[in-house]
Length: 352
Image (cartoon, rainbow, N blue to C red; front, side):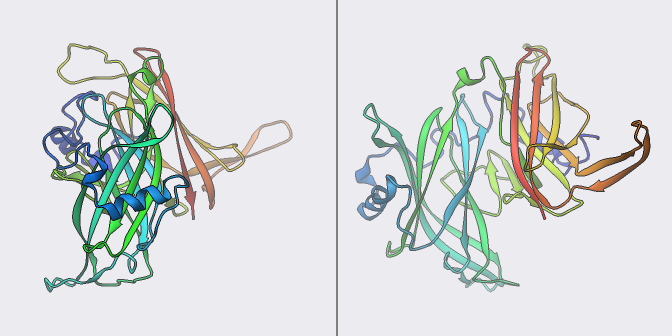
């Protein structure tokens, strides 16, 4: 396999120049002074919204005037040893309030307000607001083929210091007559978590990537997520067709540089990839791959090599077949040849 043959790698030169010129410790993320989100007292949040958050907090099941649910969380590196969790949620078009745009572009448009609050446990274990923010967002989608019953996904991300958090994400109409809240728990490990081992982020399946303007305010994106100056279009549902390849992308935090004095970090990583079936049995293994950067982009063709043998173990024939439909887990075992540290990343996916 050649690591250059992937959608993400095709844009690598542009991506490195505009986004990843800095080290992991200074990776992109919302910067102080460039956003209206800040630690805030509960009194700064509309009382209707604060009440809805508290009503469902204990059970993580809140009011759903605009039905939506958080189904996935992705943790990425951010500036100053912070981390950048991205929360993916899904909702039906009709529930999100799409209507024909007044701009005569043929698009459907929805204007919503959203609020978010990150809570942490105090000494007694009670969840208390740590930080939060709000914004109004205009979401669009093509009018051609629009279906109110179709379910699409959205993303929201924010940089945070290491720690354990519960996020409450609230969607509302401008008049607050419709209010919905969804919750997610996330743990963001600090530097101590990768002092003796690597911390690979969860792999994602990438279908497209480009540079974009960094969000200056809290934002929600439809069908993609942004990270610093990068726009990722992932296969968020992790479903691929029989015969397709996995185009995966992830980061490795905690690796040592070959030369700490070099202007740009150069690493020496080796990754072994394996796909396990639902029973935990290896379905595919690939030859080890080497990387010199902390972001890893790799295409993985999903074909099994099947052999027929005689009673003495001699190979009679060899055949390659695509991985059949089913549920699988990708396991990436990462070794840092400089420091000797190791780590493991996993990703569940479905072949349909």
